[in-house]
Length: 389
Image 1 (spheres, rainbow, N blue to C red):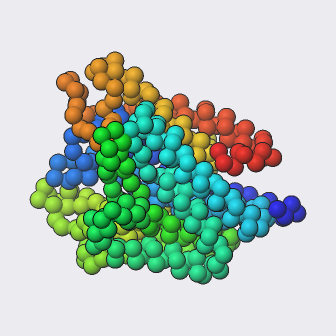
Image 2: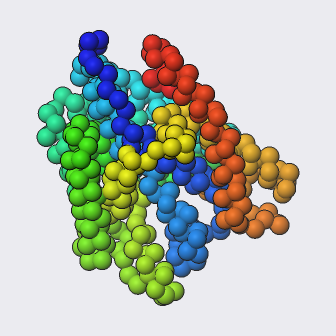
Image 3: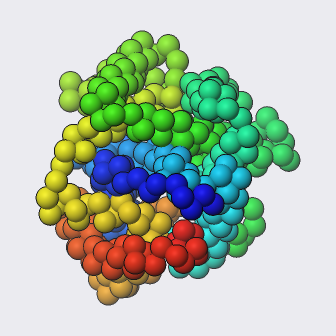
């Protein structure tokens, strides 16, 4: 570590954008446990506009979370003055730590049991960190080249499926296909986040750090241009159906509103090119505005953005525990929010209003916990293990 390197200030918009993403993430998980519907919220032949948009807004979470994790790696090196080797070691060890947590604690939190493993956010985030540690042997143009190939080219793999690999199908699922298998009567494997193109998204986020080093006026101008460019490319690809998503756009028989919503109905598992353009473009466009957002509310949102890992690890068991208490008391069942079953007890009715009210309550409970942990982390920067929490 180069201890003489100057410590630069945090990029406010990074903390604020990440904080907003963490807040919205809880909405999706509250919906899973407190107001599941008997059909997919993205099924526009059945879902209401409100339900679809409630699900759609949470689509921003994973891409921005992974992208900013790459950016944070760049800023970590810039601010600390550490060597590439030190950063590689940190990414490798923290990445493997996240993978371990996904396989153990987080899979348990989803189920309050251990009848299977669910490979989602921390799984992709952890392996992307490990991959980025290896990519750091390359010069920055090569890292960005790898990112571009993964993000823009991975939909060429859409025609390859798990069944094409026989006994080795799981390896392909881990690479590029959503997968669920009840491998035994008492154990399943669910691959929600295949690693391609998430590794590319993190690598792109690392390269994005170069832009944040620019003078603010120039940086904001480029952010607006890049954001608008990504949105424009998304619209061109979406309306032409040329490339970039297996869910092609077509007018919806339910009318103009649902035809417009169909434009936003892109594929998340794995995230298509159109999905990434749709989410990352507006997020980059928002950053110059966030840089100018000040006041008490901005400070509160930034708290969540400074301790995203702590937030993530606390919000899952909190939401599930409260849901378990509610469903046991109200319906005599352990949970409504099982991702793989949609048999609801008598008397249960899905309610978006209930979901939003519980979401607000969860955020209110989480804020003081996150604020205290953020203050503790700030006051104990000398404790190395806090970097892993």
